[in-house]
Amino acid sequence: MRRQRFAAAVAAGYAAPAREGHLKMCGRYAITTAPEAIRRLFGIAGPTPNFAARYNAAPGLELPVVRRNPKTGERVLGALLWGLIPYWAKDRKIAWRCINARGETMKTMPAFRDAYAARRCLVPADAFYEWKAAGKVKQPYAIARRHRAPFALAGLWENWKDKASGEWVRTFSIVTTKPNEVVAPLHDRMPLILAPGDYDRWLGDEPDPADLIQPYPAEAMTAWPVSPRVNKADNEDAGLLDPVEAAA
Image (tube, rainbow, N blue to C red; front, top):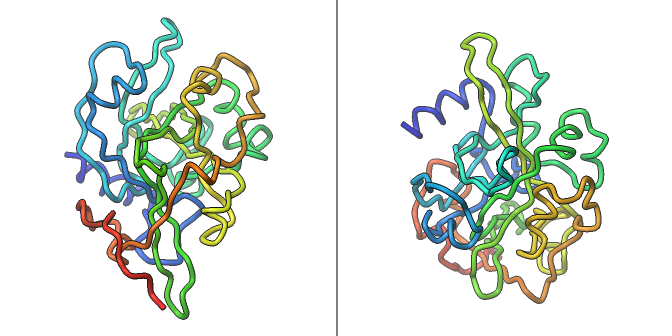
């Protein structure tokens, strides 16, 4: 069912990247921690939906996202499509352009400003991928916390109604910031990683937690080269995170 919905989403305009060199900022990540462990780590209230491990999470997929219930204030976990569709969008085509939101400008960008004001979220992850030029090819790298513990990426989410079907679609975007010393050799941006003590601030305790928009400490992170098989979104297995010898 997930693959069917992904295919439908791609056909409707998500267009997940399939080739190296065509990835926007944070365009792939891995979330392999079990749902029950995520429930405990993020203090989720109520039932926890089941979802498969993703070693190659790509735009257009339904992925686990932590939000705050507006009525109870409790944290809830649900599956949202990666690629934000603003509530005012006429169709889904804008989603691919909104897989990432620049932290420095999202407060004023029409696609993100309302979500930043009222619909911030946490995106659980175990690693993310970036690419480094090595001659005529680009070598993929996995980047994670030094002790390989899961972490939260800052996100924004939206509700959008498909006028053709009447269906409400929930989507999200990953916020990016300047890179730290680990990521800078690979890319000029990195996803915004939040410390556990800042989760509630990001989820809505404050109207504008702008001071959180900064690189995660480099000394707490590590990076290693991985197989170019990660370039193809259809490849999905634990071996994608195995270290390899970097291309010369």
